[in-house]
Length: 264
Image 1 (cartoon, rainbow, N blue to C red):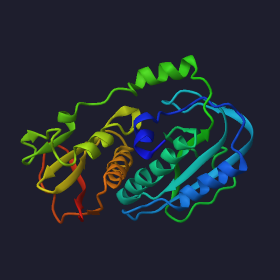
Image 2 (cartoon, helix red, strand yellow; image 1 turned 120 degrees about the vertical axis):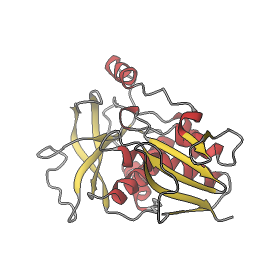
Image 3 (cartoon, helix red, strand yellow; image 1 turned 90 degrees about the horizontal axis):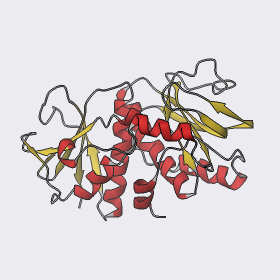
Image 4 (cartoon, helix red, strand yellow; image 1 turned 180 degrees about the vertical axis):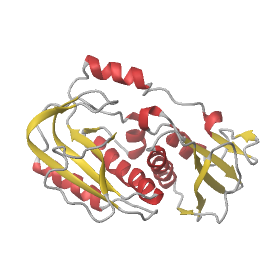
């Protein structure tokens, strides 16, 4: 499948077949980690960790993770740039895994003293904040279906609720030149399906904001912006992320993150 189909069809996977990754799959995923594009800087480290025995893991809000033997573990710095960079970068790996027929599930939690931290040293300023199982999906369990319904994982806010113009005075229309990329952003996963991203399009510039809903809101925006950027590239557009010296416009408690402009 191409990257657009991967973004449209990818779902979180919590139940695995227990077989583990083949050496070739491990190598391909490790290369995907090396090849990610990160325009934001920040500090983060992505590793792939294998456990000899499949086990179950139950984070508080994600339902049971069953029969996973391989996990990505991600150390992240404390700053906003690191969170944004991790969301943007690791989503590229998540989509690559889906193209390979492998499932993943973003999990943000506290892992101190867990098996995921054993034997791991992280660069200064980084802490283990994200894990994700990776492997071949098994049939979805009843608990997994319940978890998806509880989180509303298939529901997305309407286009007009997320994307704006004229200093937030009007909702953006689907006729806008960025509509394809924004629709793919809209499909992106987020913590408890919170969808914190908001976008202001003024002339040829795209300004990204977020509504602070959880500690993962900035990371979630990185995931969504990854979808936006990859769609722009698929549509033949080269663009640059940059920071305005002042917030282009203000609305409620929405916080300005970064802006984007096409180079072509």
